[in-house]
Image (tube, rainbow, N blue to C red):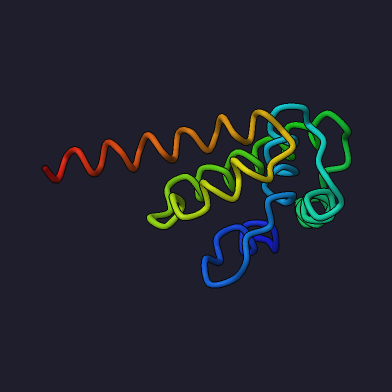
Length: 111
């Protein structure tokens, strides 16, 4: 996918909490920061989607896809402390709780 998902899913480098906030903001409100907007504009030009309503829907769909990929990543739990400490958007913290719950459920399954 684009640079946004690559940055969020690259667990070998420092995590950018503000980028995660931008993705979650886009999902919940249809607007995000510059990195997310640039990524969405690239997608729009690729698919020749110019209609504003289509843009909004596409932004949210892309944000959902990135967030789902992050939550499904086996190392996502390692980002939970950073997100809970440094996120400025409450919904990002809520999404992070689901990562914690998945990890806890997985650990309980192995007992």
